[in-house]
Image (cartoon, rainbow, N blue to C red):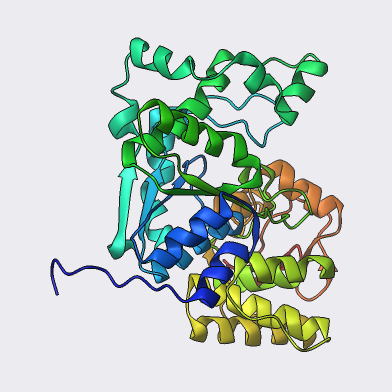
Length: 392
C-alpha cells in the first residue's frame, strides 16, 4: 500500500550473514547489529565511478551486499560518481590516475543503471549522481572540509607512501578525492557505507565529514576484493575482468578458466550460493559458472552456456552461437577481428598469433596476422574462449 512503512526483517541469522559474508571489517559492528535488530530503516550507501563502460564482477561484490541490505528492507542509495569519476580515485593505484573528460564519463555511464539492475532492484533503489552536490561546492566549503584532515593523514596511506618513497608524482587533485566521497555521505545522510578494503580511508573520511556537519557518523563495511583472471586485482585497466555485459558463454568460459584456489573466494564474495558438498573441482566450477551467468542473465542462459562449454571444450565442437561476420575475401584477418571488437587491438592480435593462440578451428594455427580472409566460410578460434565465423 502506498505510504505504508517498509517491512524491516530482523532475523538474527540473516543479519549475521549480512555482517559476515565476504566482509573484512565493520566499524562499528556491534552498534550496526543493534540498529539492524531494532527494526529502524537504515540508509545504505554505495558509490560507483563510471571509469569504464563495464561493471565487472569485482564491482558486483558491493552491489550484492547492497542487495543484502535491500532484502532486509533497508533503503539503499546507489551513487553514480559522474563528478568523482572526473577527478579519479587512486586508492588502489600505484601511479596517478589521469583526469577523465565529461564526454568520456557520460559515455561510460550510459548503461550503468541497467547493469546495476542485474544485481539490485533498481525500482526500490534511490539512484543519485554526485555532480548534484559536488558541482555546487565553492572554495570556502572545500576549504572547510579540507581543514578536517591533515597532509600526514593522506600520505601515510600505503600506496601513497610507496609512491613518495620511489619519487612518483602525487597531484594535489588526488588529495581531494576522499573529501568528495566523504561529502557524498553527508549529502545523502548515510547510515552505512559499503566499499572494498582499498576504500577504507575514503569511507572513514565520510565519518569525519558527517561529524563536521553535525550528522551521526556512518558505520562502514569493507569487503573482500577478488583477484582477476590473472590473479591481480580485477581491474578494467588490466583487462582481467568478468563483465556483467559479457555474453553468457564468455562469462561461463572465464569462470571455468579460473585457478582452482580462487573458486571458494569467488563463491563466497561474488555470489549468494551455498558452499558445495562436492570435492570435485570441475563440478564446483560449473556450479559457480552457472551461478554467475544466472546473476547477469537467467537460469536458462546459464544452462545453455554450460552445454555450449561442454560441447566446445570437452567434445571439441564449434559453438552454434558463435559470432558471424560478413566480410570480403580480400580483407585482412587483423583488420576484421579488431574492427569487429573480437580482439581489442592490432598489437593484441599479433601477440595472440605469436603465442599460437589463433587458429582455424579446430587446431590449424594461424601464423600470419596479415593474411587475407579468403573465400567461403571460415571458423576461427581466438584464445581459449572466443569463436567467430567469417563469411565472404
